[in-house]
Image 1 (cartoon, rainbow, N blue to C red):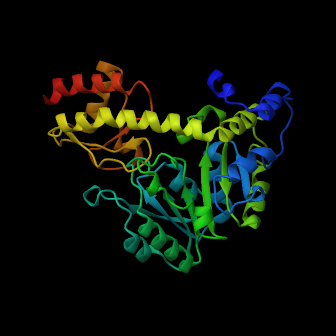
Image 2 (cartoon, one colour):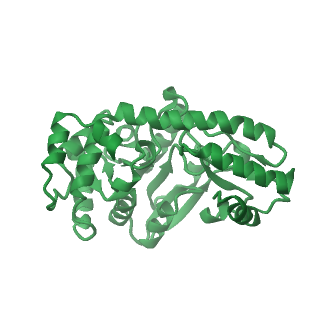
Length: 342
């Protein structure tokens, strides 16, 4: 909190010091929506709707867009809400599985074959949780064309945007890439490292869709937290500094992880992520993932999430590398590997 408040400019410091703890505007503070819009190329403040985190935004857009008889194609493995909330609307959910042997790459041709006249929504998370997959620009353009030709909506989950390992690889946001039917999902968590603010948003040039979403929001949170909105505004105005901090943590941690995977290649391997702060390594077959993560937690206090939390059948773990204490966790993981796989 102290670090963030140090980044406030004169206007945001005055907003913070004079903050009244009443209801806020249901669509989001006008200045906050202005700063969010600045993250995109052709988005205006009225094209932005603020939510209590990305979770509420996912719930709202799925329930506004989908109904029984519709279909949604969702890249998988994935953050569970991206497919289960859609399933909860009564729509049929088709999972587009990413395959490790293909480098977890998005297979646009295979996804296109899954589209039917009932396909209403295509959901893609990139940079991807948990694999770190990031489509190439050509793959992204091809996907956008497929979705556009189908007359469907594209929901681009961009919560790890700005953590691409190569800045030139950063994709055009969904809201800019597909005018009218492209929707960008953003949040102050992940890249901005401010998960506790619970500030997320949808950005799209389909204002009729945002209006329907705002009407549904009247029955969920109604409006956001007043302090959180001002703190998010401070961070977004200082986004270069905030994002530089996050990228530095990720890059430093990859410098630790690269030699780790070299040393332990006989026991654990991964497809090196192209973006984000998450990877999806695979354990050797004789190291059953559930037992491995349970024993690791008990012995070292280090937590890895087994792939089963995504419903994934492989011997994979979700490894996060967005924290400054990763070297300590990695040391504990190495000690455990020495015991069970050395």
